[in-house]
Structures are given as structure tokens and as C-alpha cells.
Length: 178
View (tube, rainbow, N blue to C red):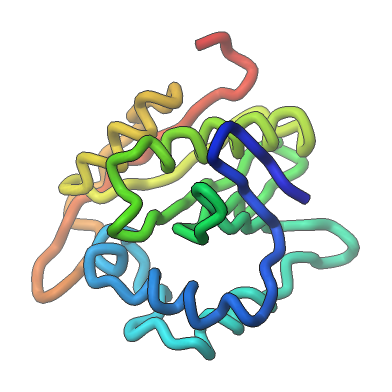
């Protein structure tokens, strides 16, 4: 499956040969710091990339996760995902990261717009949600520009490098006109 807009292409699959490039892009301390997850590998090795590429995304014939590899002008530059899909309540988590040399080009903003449309039209979801670390202003701007609202504040919720950080909980109702 693929989603396209101008120079941007989101692909659900990439060949195993791209694992080394994915690892090189993801092996960035800024990404590690900004994703707000202790399960994001560091260092991000080729083996970690292959593990991610081959993740099980289905249970009982139901997809619980969609990962798209972001390509800008035919170059792999990041990942965007819909995960923890709850078909009964029609909501899911969204997350993304963009490699350092591709930031500040609107790639994350447009990728999130595309994935929101996919979540609404293909998956029939009502809402997307995520959390963003309070210091990650750029990601918060991407979310707000895509119609996400702050729905909560989780104080001292994430421990990183000997310090606690807060998360903003953010959500978007997909059926609302923006």
C-alpha cells in the first residue's frame, strides 16, 4: 500500500536492502530523545531495522498496526505509524520520526495529513491520539497544524537521562472539519 502527495510517498513495505539506510537514519540521538519511548533501540542497528521491518502487525486476522516508510523525492527519510488500533472504539495511536537532514521541509506535517486521511477513509477510525514530550516543540507544531488538540498534561511522566519530563496528550477527531 502507498500514499502519495507531491514529492512525498509513504510505502508500507521496503526491501530488506534498505535496512542499513533505515538504521543509519534512525540512529540519531535527537530521534531517540524526542520519540519518548524506552523501547526505541539505541544504537539503532541494521538488525534492529530488520526486526522492525518484519514486525508482526496482525492478530486474529486483524491489523493492529500500520507502519509507513516516508520517502521524499525517492529518498527514505522517516517512518510514520498507526498503532494500537482499537476497532471497537475506532481510535489509534499515531507516531512518526524524520531523519535530521530532512527536517523543516514540511515532511512530517504532510505525512501526518496523509496518514490521518488513511485512518479515516481506509480504517474508518474516529480519532487519532498521541503523546509528545513537552520540550518537543516542532512535533507539537506538526500536530497542531494537522488539527490535533491538547487533551491532557502528564507531569513528570517520562524519565530520561536522570530527569523527569512531561508529556502532552494530544488527539484529533477525524470526522471534524478543520
